[in-house]
Length: 136
Image 1: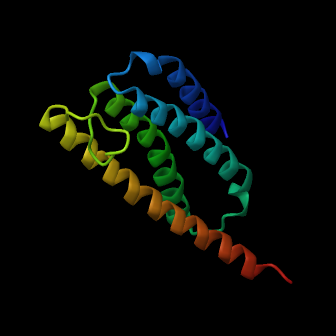
Image 2: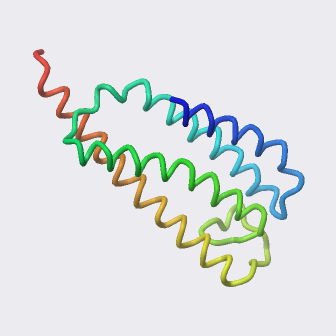
């Protein structure tokens, strides 16, 4: 719950910085990523006690979701600062940033996607196990 509120705060603060980003549209996206991922973590925190997984899977679900929430906001913020267009043609500017910045943003966004997908599947499995263990 704490992480959800903290990320929500980071998203709000990012909104104040939007005019100072190289790519203001991506700055808006960073603001929204922080706010939405913060709300997501808050909602997940409310339901976390209902996730029934083995200890290792529980830890993996926790850390992959936490990683993806924070790193998604951070990478989107970096993309706004640098003006990258990697994986974001709608919010990207007409000229790409330096190739190493584009590559870094692309690779990190891909890790965020994989981590969030893995965490979501584990959490769904944990909710399913809980539902099947309870009497109707």
